[in-house]
Image (cartoon, rainbow, N blue to C red; front, side, top):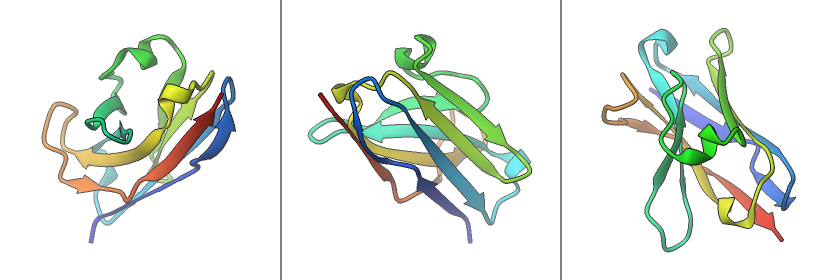
Amino acid sequence: EVQLVESGGGLVQAGGSLRLSCAASGLTFDDYVIAWFRQAPGKEREGVACADGITYIEIVNQGRFTISSDNAKKTVYLQMNSLKPEDSAVYYCAASTHCSGTFDYWGQGTQVTVTS
């Protein structure tokens, strides 16, 4: 059974940092890419970054968010710096065979709340 488990969310003040983790099991890690998505209340889910370096939205290009992976631990990280209240959302990781493909496996999500 494929499982993706996110952790690391929480409450942080604007300007602070968080590091999210996504631990994968039940899949051959090298055969998949892991991406981070987020969904804020009343908004559509949006992509944040994919672990092969392809970015979905601009915030990664601005250098605030950085995705990385530890293949030995089958874990993908999302380092989030200079957080803003508009970054508040439930953050999900998901697995696919490629970043532009269909994401078949999803984690349960971790809440990130940024206060002003």
